[in-house]
Length: 120
Image 1: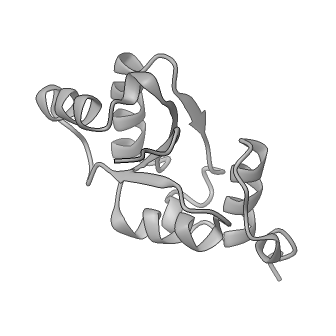
Image 2 (image 1 turned 90 degrees about the vertical axis):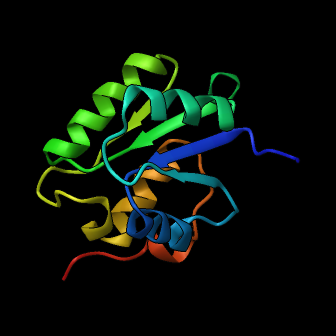
Image 3 (image 1 turned 30 degrees about the horizontal axis):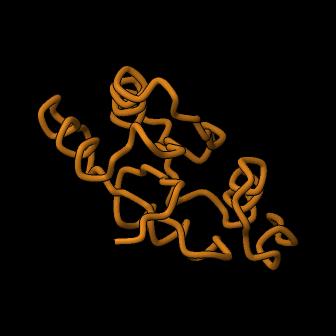
């Protein structure tokens, strides 16, 4: 299997859907479906070979997202953290243009139409 070198880790399917909408290219996006146990995290790391890849953590700003980010950072110290403004609370509720800007700043190719948007 030809694996992409980068991987984004998000909490849920709606987060993945939002990122896929904004990204210009196919990227591997892993959903944790909430907080992981230590065992489940080890399995995830092994399955996706996360120690050998560029990992980006993109979780919500609520308690479960902060807890998950902390756990992931303990195991994946090389991971880069991507943050949304706490006013949005959840990745899936963050406007596309904001997501596009965050991803572009992390050197992901984004659909340029989303960089032009703004809140009205």
